[in-house]
Length: 159
Length: 139
Image (cartoon, rainbow over the protein chains, first blue to last red):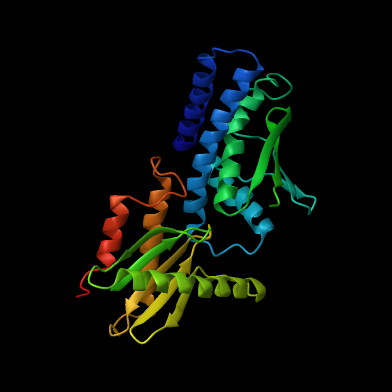
């Protein structure tokens, strides 16, 4: 239980720190901070993508990798599974979490909607990093309609 | 004990390759290179066979008169190739598996090192010492 709190506080501080030293409050500076967060999440995801599937057998197809993300990765980082995974079978997946741990302490409803993307950037990077170690190039974006429910959209880049 | 250990990235370039210093290194480099073809064959064969379990350990890739080559692939498509002396008949499959497991653990530690950029050559001394412990007593 305590370890979950440690990560949540660290994450909050990361976001607060990046926004405290905002020399450029316009949209350019915002994007920089969001990409810094996403980059951090990416590196962490790369390492997790190596360590977590260590004992599991090789993945047979893309859907197995996504299921691994929703179950094992989410449980390891947030102590719960993803609530729903949907796909259009053409390379786009939507992962929905109805009570995202990094947002649940903030509000439950439409309050703080504009601030929510800051708290999702790291997790988007995390998903992208894990996918990249497992051999899948992707683009991950997040959207929030009402806290604490959020959706992560994963689009696989076909090279 | 292993005579040569190599870690190959998923784009098929070597991240780490080390052979026992007494032998001709180039010969081992070629062996590892040719064994990559066998590894690819095994991976694609596993994909087509509708087996539920896909193992990470690939087993004996090919034997030559002096040496045997073993392979292992991780979930991130990083391949480990190990060349052992054929005269060392005491080495059983289980021992090779445990050597690969140790290698995999060390490799995971290297990945988690914040000073390591994925895709670079491995320069970690901890990894070096794990490999050394597997390569002793060759001469």
